[in-house]
Length: 102
Image (cartoon, rainbow, N blue to C red; front, top):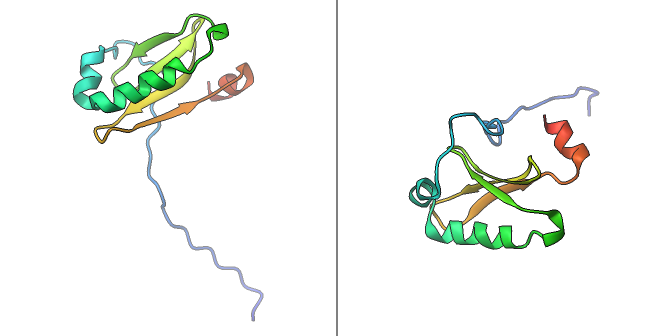
């Protein structure tokens, strides 16, 4: 065995991250009903219902690239409803995590 090191770079997933809320890209729920599916939006609504009342008033913003959920002016969850009846989402809890993403 030799003392050589070999690196093999393989692209596993090529994903383009979208910015948070682009101005002018707001849409309505009907847009996401057509782009995703009723089943995926129902699943998204079920997830939103899990947010505890202590979190404050939850607001939902329908944007062209995602559906954002937040309270008091700060988004903490981004949904991407899909046609197949599932929804991709990511959550950033805590102010420190949200500040790192900005």
